[in-house]
Length: 289
Image 1 (cartoon, rainbow, N blue to C red):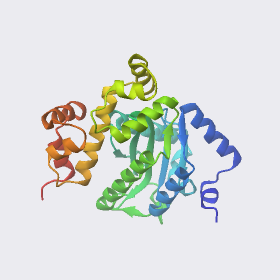
Image 2: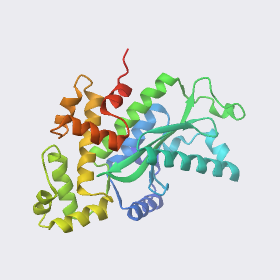
Image 3: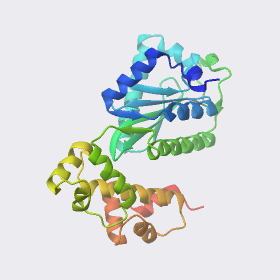
């Protein structure tokens, strides 16, 4: 069976609309992305969707599993508006807080949204939806959820953790990327390998044959940030990863492994950018037993 074609119903018109949406948003999608979304959705009987910056749907995994309960809600104009407003609210929170957020929608199902930042540029939202919660199934149309798997709070927590891993995989393996200047791509490739080093804007400008002023303008035009802000963002993302995956490391070890020579400066930078200290973030990830 052609898993992607049958499950995702990629007819020529749908494919054309998808390509048009990608062009409009400057997003590039790997052919592996629909398969990854579809496989994840199938594992949990859920729906996972990529939306562009404007909140327009790009591609969905599990599109064949649009459940009767949600369809019934969306049959009325008021229901469709409520669904749209619910999504818009959650998107705004995810983008503002730059992390995974969730809420129980007006229909009583859990929705989870993760903002996608590609090359430190906000690019898309990925939403995980249609999550029924054990003991909290809606009453009025509840019979339409017959046969739908309901999850406990502990199970939902693990599903969200796997969802976050999937989003990181999508970004790290460029299943979703943005269309940028070719020279900028070379610079970002270099930074992904050398962000721990004491690299300067003069170094990367010389790498692609540009002057410092031109490189500064290029960073501003593509990311909306300075070179320094981009570099700090990459280092702090690495620090976040290390704190998630290596709880035994000290803050000093994490600072050095992320490209900071001075652990105190690392802590100040982290607090300035994240609003909390590295120690506070690590305590949230690994609470004391």
